[in-house]
Length: 367
Ligand SMILES: *[C@@H]1O[C@H](CO)[C@@H](O)[C@H](O)[C@H]1NC(C)=O
Ligand SMILES: *[C@@H]1O[C@H](CO)[C@@H](O)[C@H](O)[C@H]1NC(C)=O
Ligand SMILES: *[C@@H]1O[C@H](CO)[C@@H](O)[C@H](O)[C@H]1NC(C)=O
Ligand SMILES: *[C@@H]1O[C@H](CO)[C@@H](O)[C@H](O)[C@H]1NC(C)=O
Ligand SMILES: *[C@@H]1O[C@H](CO)[C@@H](O)[C@H](O)[C@H]1NC(C)=O
Ligand SMILES: *[C@@H]1O[C@H](CO)[C@@H](O)[C@H](O)[C@H]1NC(C)=O
Figure 1: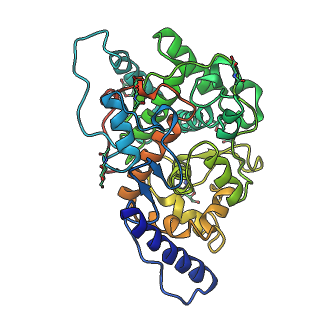
Figure 2: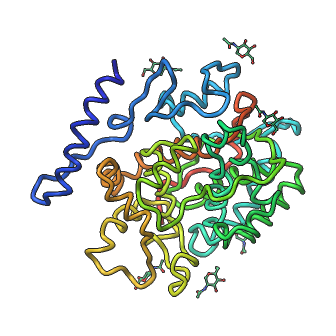
Figure 3: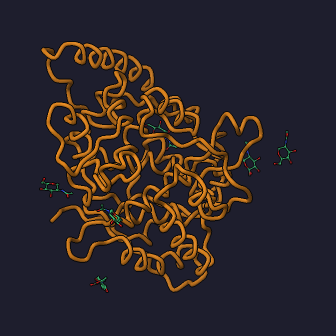
């Protein structure tokens, strides 16, 4: 029932979006809270925005409480953000225990002590989390090419050093890979834990619910599966759909450019950011991208053609506009979409464990 109503709404809203693009005289597209519009959820099949639940959750046979929790987050039954609990156990063999030892190390690495913002290592860690996970394809998996996904291959198979799309990730990959080895933790988990840690280390960044238990890669991932900063919107949508990530999740995920800077997209303008406040996990990026034609960009910013294209896609324009002034909606949706990304290619989700409470606490105000 709910899904039928929502699909009717989506049609009329998309029409509005198209119309308002063509005619600037039309009224503003109304703001709508995330979760109430556009996202179509079928609780009987677990299909959200046209995409089934990931990996071994797809058949809806939840044999553990964690797998049920993950399914509930992905189907919007429960929040994708942790609260204020801190890990508090003397059990050295608890799967989260060692992650509490990693946390102060990452905080030292990711936080600028003077400004209290997140730094270049944090940006790199967020990007590394995307690049490690993003290398898996449903089409290839259907042909029994199941390698890739969130498996640590960025480090384990030297992909950070050998693939052009990973330029700039060499140093963070080495640091995180060696840290995982030193503490005998899964390298695959390390990249995803570090991305979550970097996110919450940025002021206003969500404390995303974070799970561990990913197996490590036993071979390199397929090449050529990561997006390019010149891709048009449909190319990006198809690429992410093939990873099990819907188009609305994609709009939320590219918001990570809130804290990014580029060196290789426009090499003549190194270290220019995609957001006017690249040390803070805010929604400036969405507005900055929309305005990148009409206002002269500050000399320290560069908007990626791929982001501009998404912001103008008729099916996505309402969601994009909606995030400009909606921090809370965006971070919740980002956290949910990132959980999905962090599980790309993982086939033992049933056996994972939640370690959100090993992460630092969210900072809700800044400065
Ligand atoms: C669900 O998974 C469990 C454990 O893998 C298995 O024993 C059980 O038969 C499955 N149930 C269904 C209905 O597939
Ligand atoms: C999720 O919520 C919907 C109603 O919003 C309910 O029908 C469904 O049973 C819930 N599913 C789970 C797994 O909690
Ligand atoms: C940053 O601050 C923390 C806590 O105050 C301190 O332990 C650490 O040594 C500082 N790091 C640097 C590089 O100054
Ligand atoms: C799929 O690949 C695995 C090894 O990667 C192999 O053992 C298996 O036989 C293959 N299955 C099919 C159907 O080709
Ligand atoms: C860009 O940032 C990198 C990494 O922080 C730094 O090493 C480099 O010197 C910076 N380049 C410029 C031109 O500011
Ligand atoms: C970008 O430049 C403007 C002035 O041109 C300055 O106010 C702002 O702080 C700079 N931002 C960053 C992130 O360097």
